Image (tube, rainbow, N blue to C red; front, side):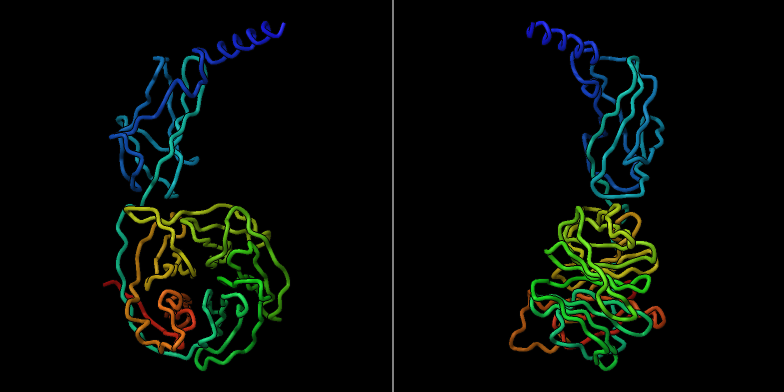
Length: 348
């Protein structure tokens, strides 16, 4: 009886597949040159390997839900999102329909432009502030710092360096990036998968939240509608400010590779400015696609900082960027630096 049931099941499976295998094994996607790495708006030859010579009546290509028009057996990767993506082919053929897919990498269309900086003012900065987050609200500068045992959140007068208020984190937390939105301050921690929410006006903690799929907390910024969160990978996550749920992400790319060094973040006019971890530079990232459109070279800035006996060149690096919308300048500093620099940037 058992043998009969097994035989019957095998027969049903054979008939359902039409040729003894899953429908997805009937076809595969062939891309020009056998490549799987492309640039945005690149046009590429494409075809379907029809392994059993089935009669195909229609094919619709898409990348993560965005349909790609086809002309002369070519598609153009005019998609919104870049990075690791899935190319899908929805095939209608004589026995029904099937979806097949192939993993690809989509990179930026153009190389990043290089920017330089000019210092217009220098201000004092607390050498006990291991800067992880920096943001203006009105004319007051807010800062989140790291290191277990000395992580804190403060607001201060950037001209004098004097604190208006400060909240110390529990010694078990390593503080990370901050951002301000809807009268709340949001602060990340590094590896504890925990973030904190503060009342902006009362300057007191009112809530906490847990991370979702992202594994760590690095940088944080916002566009007035959602939060952007870096986590040490190539991804920048979108967080719902009401639920703190991760609702998607972009991946950071150049025209040559996927990049994973975004640290402290600042949002300005559709672009995310991101400190590059342990490098004297800041990326300018398109907040919609993830393309790195520019790089600001801050080489030489650390030479203007007083280096004490405990200075560590691999630890006390550039980190912290805040935009002052009224002055239309950027303020930058580093971990335990004694100076805060107001700068303008321009293309080289």
